[in-house]
Image (cartoon, rainbow, N blue to C red; front, top):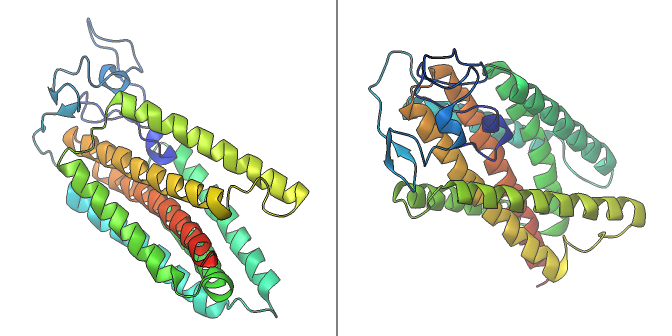
Amino acid sequence: MRSSNPVFSRRGFSRDNGYAGFNAQQPQAGGPAAGTNPYATNPYATNPYAQDAQLGAPAQAPARPGAMTIDDVVSRTAITLGTVFVTATLAWFLMPVDPANINTSYGIAIGAALVAFVFAMIQSFKRKASPALILLYAAFEGVFLGVISNAVSTYLSPGVVPQAVLGTMAVFAGVLIAYKMRWIRVTRRFYGFVMAAALGFILLMAVNMLFAVFGGGDGLGFRSGGLGILFGVIGIILGACFLALDFKQVEDGITYGAPREESWLAAFGLTMTLVWIYLEFLRLLSILQGDD
């Protein structure tokens, strides 16, 4: 199963040699050609290690030295999210958004977002996880979130930031429980539906942004009023679906014995998804409070 998250989507987990990452596998006698993973392309129909044909849940492989564990994922995710939180807090207090320097603050926020995006893309195309790149991404993403959150809280919706944080935590906890209880069935059909919906959503938002830049106002109105509320809810639902796909990818990595350093990629991907959900909550709650 490949995640919607670009960090995970370039890597597949396989039982062959413990982990099938970006590198091509060696051909085996009577087996698939080099560079193929028979389970990554169809983990549900032909995977002999699957216990459930619908879920594609593989049997747990014996633990091996240096393999990724859930504790590794939790600790790296805590470090990455902690970096986001610290830099966001510093940006909030050290870069106040007021009429005297609002343009400077927005410029810093946009610049930090672009730098974070560059670090994210570099890591996405690297063959191995780089903790330095991941933490740099988290640091600059935190600066962006701190300034934007301060601006929204100051000028649009006071008190909305804690609500957005709580909403993000609630979605994370809810999806995790639903995934562990198998209420969410991560199948290939689910994956295809989420990817198609995400592509359509991103294209619509891009078109709306272009209309807003060249036509002024709110573009096509996808981010205000009734349509804004609708698309905010859709964005949060998509974020929840991304979480389910990411949980599946992490589960497969642990099952197939991915190396411990790949837990940094898990932390990276989960952080990106949580940032998505937080921003959608921030936008949705701002619209709802503005309509009161």
